[in-house]
Image (cartoon, rainbow, N blue to C red; front, top):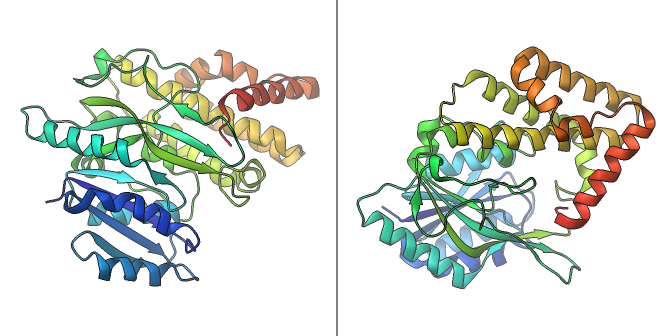
Length: 338
Protein backbone atom coordinates (compact mmCIF):
# COMPACT_ATOMS: atom_id res chain seq x y z
CA UNK A 1 0.00 0.00 0.00
CA UNK A 2 1.22 3.47 -0.88
CA UNK A 3 1.46 6.27 1.65
CA UNK A 4 -0.09 8.97 -0.53
CA UNK A 5 -2.08 8.84 -3.76
CA UNK A 6 -2.09 11.86 -6.03
CA UNK A 7 -4.87 12.28 -8.56
CA UNK A 8 -4.13 14.61 -11.48
CA UNK A 9 -7.29 15.32 -13.51
CA UNK A 10 -6.20 16.17 -17.05
CA UNK A 11 -8.17 17.55 -19.95
CA UNK A 12 -6.16 18.87 -22.91
CA UNK A 13 -3.28 19.45 -20.51
CA UNK A 14 -0.34 18.74 -22.79
CA UNK A 15 1.16 22.21 -22.35
CA UNK A 16 1.62 22.09 -18.57
CA UNK A 17 0.99 18.61 -17.13
CA UNK A 18 4.67 17.59 -17.27
CA UNK A 19 5.59 20.33 -14.78
CA UNK A 20 2.90 19.06 -12.41
CA UNK A 21 3.94 15.40 -12.70
CA UNK A 22 7.64 16.15 -12.35
CA UNK A 23 6.98 18.05 -9.11
CA UNK A 24 5.36 14.94 -7.59
CA UNK A 25 7.83 12.28 -8.79
CA UNK A 26 10.41 13.00 -6.02
CA UNK A 27 8.05 11.19 -3.63
CA UNK A 28 9.35 7.95 -5.11
CA UNK A 29 7.84 4.65 -4.04
CA UNK A 30 5.96 6.25 -1.15
CA UNK A 31 3.46 7.71 -3.61
CA UNK A 32 1.36 6.82 -6.58
CA UNK A 33 0.46 9.31 -9.27
CA UNK A 34 -2.88 8.69 -10.97
CA UNK A 35 -3.00 10.67 -14.20
CA UNK A 36 -6.65 10.74 -15.22
CA UNK A 37 -7.04 11.60 -18.88
CA UNK A 38 -10.61 12.88 -19.06
CA UNK A 39 -11.24 12.34 -22.76
CA UNK A 40 -8.56 14.77 -23.93
CA UNK A 41 -8.26 15.64 -27.61
CA UNK A 42 -4.58 16.60 -27.61
CA UNK A 43 -1.45 14.65 -26.55
CA UNK A 44 -2.48 14.37 -22.89
CA UNK A 45 -3.14 10.61 -23.15
CA UNK A 46 0.18 10.03 -24.89
CA UNK A 47 2.08 11.94 -22.18
CA UNK A 48 0.26 10.01 -19.44
CA UNK A 49 1.19 6.69 -21.04
CA UNK A 50 4.78 7.87 -21.44
CA UNK A 51 5.10 8.52 -17.70
CA UNK A 52 3.43 5.22 -16.82
CA UNK A 53 5.92 3.36 -18.98
CA UNK A 54 8.87 5.24 -17.48
CA UNK A 55 7.70 4.96 -13.84
CA UNK A 56 5.61 1.75 -13.73
CA UNK A 57 5.60 1.40 -9.94
CA UNK A 58 4.62 5.01 -9.35
CA UNK A 59 2.56 6.36 -12.24
CA UNK A 60 -0.72 4.94 -13.49
CA UNK A 61 -2.42 6.37 -16.57
CA UNK A 62 -6.20 6.13 -16.55
CA UNK A 63 -8.21 6.99 -19.65
CA UNK A 64 -11.93 7.71 -19.53
CA UNK A 65 -14.66 9.38 -21.53
CA UNK A 66 -15.02 13.05 -20.76
CA UNK A 67 -16.92 13.51 -17.52
CA UNK A 68 -15.43 16.71 -16.20
CA UNK A 69 -13.17 17.52 -13.26
CA UNK A 70 -15.49 15.94 -10.70
CA UNK A 71 -15.68 12.62 -12.52
CA UNK A 72 -11.89 12.57 -12.81
CA UNK A 73 -11.63 13.03 -9.04
CA UNK A 74 -14.21 10.26 -8.53
CA UNK A 75 -12.05 7.98 -10.69
CA UNK A 76 -9.00 8.90 -8.65
CA UNK A 77 -10.71 7.98 -5.39
CA UNK A 78 -11.91 4.65 -6.82
CA UNK A 79 -8.43 3.70 -8.00
CA UNK A 80 -6.33 5.05 -5.14
CA UNK A 81 -4.27 2.54 -3.14
CA UNK A 82 -2.68 5.14 -0.86
CA UNK A 83 -3.57 5.63 2.80
CA UNK A 84 -4.01 9.32 2.00
CA UNK A 85 -5.36 11.10 -1.07
CA UNK A 86 -4.50 14.43 -2.69
CA UNK A 87 -5.81 16.16 -5.82
CA UNK A 88 -3.39 18.30 -7.82
CA UNK A 89 -4.74 20.08 -10.88
CA UNK A 90 -2.64 19.61 -14.01
CA UNK A 91 -1.63 23.28 -14.27
CA UNK A 92 -0.52 23.45 -10.63
CA UNK A 93 2.48 21.94 -8.85
CA UNK A 94 3.89 21.24 -5.40
CA UNK A 95 6.92 22.62 -3.58
CA UNK A 96 9.67 20.02 -3.17
CA UNK A 97 10.93 21.02 0.29
CA UNK A 98 7.43 21.18 1.72
CA UNK A 99 6.61 17.89 -0.03
CA UNK A 100 9.38 16.05 1.79
CA UNK A 101 8.10 17.36 5.11
CA UNK A 102 4.54 16.29 4.26
CA UNK A 103 5.69 12.74 3.53
CA UNK A 104 7.88 12.45 6.62
CA UNK A 105 5.07 13.78 8.81
CA UNK A 106 2.52 11.34 7.38
CA UNK A 107 4.97 8.48 7.96
CA UNK A 108 5.42 9.46 11.60
CA UNK A 109 1.66 9.65 12.09
CA UNK A 110 0.84 6.23 10.63
CA UNK A 111 3.58 4.69 12.77
CA UNK A 112 1.95 6.17 15.88
CA UNK A 113 -1.19 5.22 17.76
CA UNK A 114 -3.52 7.95 16.44
CA UNK A 115 -5.52 7.93 13.20
CA UNK A 116 -5.39 11.09 11.14
CA UNK A 117 -8.35 11.89 8.89
CA UNK A 118 -7.26 15.18 7.33
CA UNK A 119 -4.00 17.09 6.91
CA UNK A 120 -4.07 20.78 6.07
CA UNK A 121 -1.13 22.67 4.53
CA UNK A 122 -0.68 26.18 3.18
CA UNK A 123 -1.01 26.95 -0.51
CA UNK A 124 0.37 29.78 -2.59
CA UNK A 125 -1.50 31.78 -5.23
CA UNK A 126 0.96 31.70 -8.13
CA UNK A 127 -0.75 34.57 -9.89
CA UNK A 128 0.85 35.37 -13.24
CA UNK A 129 2.42 38.80 -13.24
CA UNK A 130 2.04 39.31 -9.48
CA UNK A 131 5.19 40.35 -7.63
CA UNK A 132 3.75 39.40 -4.25
CA UNK A 133 2.58 35.81 -3.89
CA UNK A 134 -0.42 35.51 -1.60
CA UNK A 135 -0.15 32.59 0.83
CA UNK A 136 -3.26 31.01 2.29
CA UNK A 137 -2.09 30.01 5.78
CA UNK A 138 -4.08 28.73 8.76
CA UNK A 139 -1.81 29.79 11.61
CA UNK A 140 -4.49 31.36 13.77
CA UNK A 141 -7.26 28.95 12.82
CA UNK A 142 -5.68 25.54 13.49
CA UNK A 143 -3.11 24.58 16.14
CA UNK A 144 0.14 23.58 14.44
CA UNK A 145 1.93 20.26 14.18
CA UNK A 146 -0.33 18.15 16.35
CA UNK A 147 -3.39 15.99 15.86
CA UNK A 148 -6.51 17.75 17.09
CA UNK A 149 -10.27 17.30 17.00
CA UNK A 150 -12.89 19.81 15.87
CA UNK A 151 -13.36 20.94 19.47
CA UNK A 152 -9.79 22.22 19.48
CA UNK A 153 -10.21 24.27 16.31
CA UNK A 154 -9.92 28.03 16.58
CA UNK A 155 -11.72 30.67 14.54
CA UNK A 156 -11.40 30.93 10.75
CA UNK A 157 -11.50 34.50 9.55
CA UNK A 158 -13.70 35.37 6.58
CA UNK A 159 -11.98 34.43 3.34
CA UNK A 160 -9.85 31.78 5.06
CA UNK A 161 -11.09 28.30 4.21
CA UNK A 162 -9.83 24.79 3.72
CA UNK A 163 -9.76 24.41 -0.04
CA UNK A 164 -8.90 21.50 -2.32
CA UNK A 165 -5.40 22.94 -2.64
CA UNK A 166 -4.76 22.78 1.11
CA UNK A 167 -6.32 19.45 2.06
CA UNK A 168 -5.07 15.86 2.15
CA UNK A 169 -7.77 13.36 3.17
CA UNK A 170 -7.43 9.85 4.49
CA UNK A 171 -8.69 7.85 1.54
CA UNK A 172 -11.08 5.80 3.66
CA UNK A 173 -12.74 9.00 4.89
CA UNK A 174 -13.58 9.95 1.32
CA UNK A 175 -14.98 6.51 0.61
CA UNK A 176 -16.92 6.36 3.86
CA UNK A 177 -18.51 9.74 3.11
CA UNK A 178 -20.03 8.31 -0.07
CA UNK A 179 -19.21 11.51 -1.91
CA UNK A 180 -19.76 11.34 -5.67
CA UNK A 181 -18.99 14.58 -7.47
CA UNK A 182 -21.36 15.49 -10.32
CA UNK A 183 -20.27 15.05 -13.92
CA UNK A 184 -19.70 17.90 -16.35
CA UNK A 185 -19.80 20.50 -13.60
CA UNK A 186 -17.18 23.07 -12.67
CA UNK A 187 -16.58 24.29 -9.10
CA UNK A 188 -17.03 20.81 -7.59
CA UNK A 189 -13.86 21.41 -5.56
CA UNK A 190 -16.19 23.14 -3.11
CA UNK A 191 -18.09 19.89 -2.64
CA UNK A 192 -14.82 17.97 -2.29
CA UNK A 193 -13.79 20.01 0.75
CA UNK A 194 -17.33 20.19 2.16
CA UNK A 195 -19.13 16.86 2.05
CA UNK A 196 -16.47 14.70 3.76
CA UNK A 197 -16.11 17.02 6.78
CA UNK A 198 -18.71 15.28 9.01
CA UNK A 199 -16.58 12.12 8.66
CA UNK A 200 -13.38 13.89 9.70
CA UNK A 201 -12.64 13.36 13.37
CA UNK A 202 -8.96 14.32 13.52
CA UNK A 203 -7.01 17.14 11.84
CA UNK A 204 -3.33 18.02 11.56
CA UNK A 205 -2.03 21.38 10.35
CA UNK A 206 1.45 21.37 8.83
CA UNK A 207 2.39 25.04 8.19
CA UNK A 208 4.41 24.61 4.99
CA UNK A 209 3.71 26.17 1.58
CA UNK A 210 2.99 22.85 -0.12
CA UNK A 211 0.64 23.52 -3.03
CA UNK A 212 1.28 26.05 -5.79
CA UNK A 213 -1.98 27.23 -7.32
CA UNK A 214 -1.45 28.81 -10.73
CA UNK A 215 -3.73 31.67 -11.72
CA UNK A 216 -3.36 33.39 -15.05
CA UNK A 217 -4.85 31.43 -17.93
CA UNK A 218 -7.78 33.17 -19.56
CA UNK A 219 -9.77 29.94 -19.79
CA UNK A 220 -9.45 29.02 -16.11
CA UNK A 221 -12.70 28.30 -14.30
CA UNK A 222 -11.88 30.93 -11.64
CA UNK A 223 -11.48 33.67 -14.22
CA UNK A 224 -14.32 36.09 -13.52
CA UNK A 225 -15.64 36.23 -17.09
CA UNK A 226 -15.57 32.44 -17.26
CA UNK A 227 -17.39 32.18 -13.93
CA UNK A 228 -20.16 34.41 -15.21
CA UNK A 229 -20.51 32.33 -18.38
CA UNK A 230 -20.69 29.17 -16.28
CA UNK A 231 -22.87 30.62 -13.57
CA UNK A 232 -25.47 27.86 -13.87
CA UNK A 233 -22.82 25.36 -12.76
CA UNK A 234 -21.86 27.55 -9.81
CA UNK A 235 -25.56 27.71 -8.87
CA UNK A 236 -25.82 23.92 -9.13
CA UNK A 237 -22.91 23.42 -6.73
CA UNK A 238 -24.33 26.07 -4.41
CA UNK A 239 -27.69 24.27 -4.29
CA UNK A 240 -26.02 20.90 -3.68
CA UNK A 241 -24.25 22.41 -0.68
CA UNK A 242 -27.56 23.78 0.61
CA UNK A 243 -29.12 20.34 0.13
CA UNK A 244 -26.27 18.66 1.97
CA UNK A 245 -26.54 20.97 4.98
CA UNK A 246 -30.31 20.50 5.05
CA UNK A 247 -30.02 16.70 5.14
CA UNK A 248 -27.39 16.34 7.86
CA UNK A 249 -27.43 16.39 11.63
CA UNK A 250 -24.12 18.01 12.58
CA UNK A 251 -23.72 17.70 16.36
CA UNK A 252 -20.15 19.06 16.59
CA UNK A 253 -20.63 22.80 16.99
CA UNK A 254 -17.30 24.03 15.60
CA UNK A 255 -17.57 21.80 12.55
CA UNK A 256 -21.16 22.91 11.95
CA UNK A 257 -20.25 26.59 12.32
CA UNK A 258 -17.32 26.19 9.94
CA UNK A 259 -19.53 24.54 7.31
CA UNK A 260 -22.18 27.23 7.67
CA UNK A 261 -19.55 29.92 7.27
CA UNK A 262 -18.21 28.22 4.14
CA UNK A 263 -21.71 27.97 2.68
CA UNK A 264 -22.15 31.66 3.50
CA UNK A 265 -19.15 32.54 1.33
CA UNK A 266 -20.28 30.31 -1.55
CA UNK A 267 -23.72 31.96 -1.54
CA UNK A 268 -21.99 35.34 -1.61
CA UNK A 269 -19.71 34.39 -4.52
CA UNK A 270 -22.67 33.08 -6.53
CA UNK A 271 -24.69 36.21 -5.79
CA UNK A 272 -21.88 38.57 -6.72
CA UNK A 273 -21.25 36.77 -10.03
CA UNK A 274 -24.96 37.05 -10.83
CA UNK A 275 -24.89 40.75 -10.01
CA UNK A 276 -21.77 41.17 -12.15
CA UNK A 277 -23.59 39.53 -15.07
CA UNK A 278 -25.70 42.70 -15.06
CA UNK A 279 -28.89 41.47 -16.69
CA UNK A 280 -32.44 40.74 -15.58
CA UNK A 281 -32.16 36.99 -16.12
CA UNK A 282 -29.17 36.80 -13.80
CA UNK A 283 -30.94 38.85 -11.11
CA UNK A 284 -33.91 36.48 -11.33
CA UNK A 285 -31.55 33.53 -10.87
CA UNK A 286 -30.09 35.24 -7.81
CA UNK A 287 -33.56 35.66 -6.29
CA UNK A 288 -34.42 32.07 -7.18
CA UNK A 289 -31.30 30.81 -5.41
CA UNK A 290 -32.21 32.56 -2.16
CA UNK A 291 -35.81 31.37 -2.45
CA UNK A 292 -34.53 27.83 -2.96
CA UNK A 293 -32.44 28.21 0.20
CA UNK A 294 -35.45 29.53 2.12
CA UNK A 295 -37.61 26.58 1.10
CA UNK A 296 -34.92 23.99 1.87
CA UNK A 297 -33.88 25.21 5.31
CA UNK A 298 -35.58 28.26 6.75
CA UNK A 299 -33.50 28.40 9.93
CA UNK A 300 -30.18 28.25 8.08
CA UNK A 301 -31.47 30.64 5.41
CA UNK A 302 -32.33 33.25 8.04
CA UNK A 303 -28.93 32.87 9.69
CA UNK A 304 -27.03 33.42 6.44
CA UNK A 305 -29.41 35.79 4.67
CA UNK A 306 -29.47 38.19 7.62
CA UNK A 307 -25.80 37.84 8.48
CA UNK A 308 -23.28 40.48 7.42
CA UNK A 309 -22.37 38.91 4.07
CA UNK A 310 -25.92 37.86 3.25
CA UNK A 311 -27.14 41.40 3.76
CA UNK A 312 -24.19 42.83 1.81
CA UNK A 313 -24.96 40.84 -1.36
CA UNK A 314 -28.69 41.49 -1.16
CA UNK A 315 -28.76 45.27 -0.86
CA UNK A 316 -31.85 46.60 -2.69
CA UNK A 317 -31.84 48.46 -5.98
CA UNK A 318 -29.16 49.42 -8.45
CA UNK A 319 -27.21 51.42 -5.87
CA UNK A 320 -27.27 48.44 -3.52
CA UNK A 321 -25.86 46.20 -6.23
CA UNK A 322 -23.16 48.78 -6.92
CA UNK A 323 -22.17 48.75 -3.24
CA UNK A 324 -22.10 44.94 -3.23
CA UNK A 325 -19.72 44.91 -6.18
CA UNK A 326 -17.57 47.54 -4.48
CA UNK A 327 -17.19 45.28 -1.45
CA UNK A 328 -16.31 42.37 -3.71
CA UNK A 329 -13.61 44.41 -5.46
CA UNK A 330 -12.03 45.32 -2.14
CA UNK A 331 -11.95 41.65 -1.14
CA UNK A 332 -10.56 40.77 -4.57
CA UNK A 333 -7.75 43.30 -4.17
CA UNK A 334 -6.62 42.06 -0.77
CA UNK A 335 -7.05 38.33 -1.36
CA UNK A 336 -6.17 38.16 -5.07
CA UNK A 337 -8.20 35.01 -5.55
CA UNK A 338 -8.72 35.21 -9.33
